[in-house]
Length: 179
Image (tube, rainbow, N blue to C red; front, side):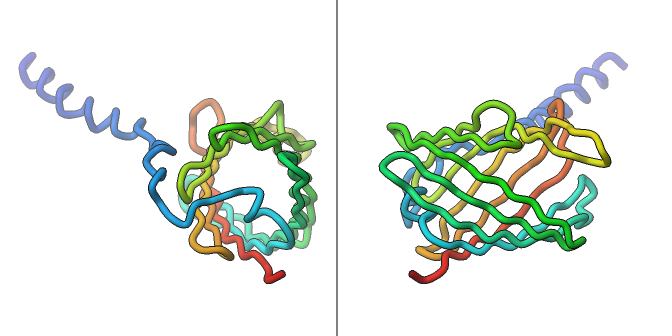
């Protein structure tokens, strides 16, 4: 009996731990085209997205019109959201580009400072969002990954969690308008 328990534990442990593994930004270092946030997020960008809960059900659809500009290493991403239920929201990111592809950023509904890094065609961005739900505000963590497809299109996938428990996922497609 004890041997079966040990065998079960030996088999279950790698399976359980594999759920904790995450991708590394360094794995994208050689991917092309190379993402330069200041170049991509400059001008007008349209985005289309969904939020899926833990079960995979789409609970919100939305569009975003972004007006983005940079002066040196400082960028402003002015985002105007329109949700499928008719509600609207605005978020203004203030980004700073640092050495080695690192970025920091703030926005009014972001708790503290967001941090991220680019490698190759990818950008990983982590932050805590103050999310209003039914008259209360919850602090949720976002692990945000963006992948440059070409000079106009970028895909974005973010996992939203609280206390390490996955609440849902956000998927976005960005399309940069022609100048």
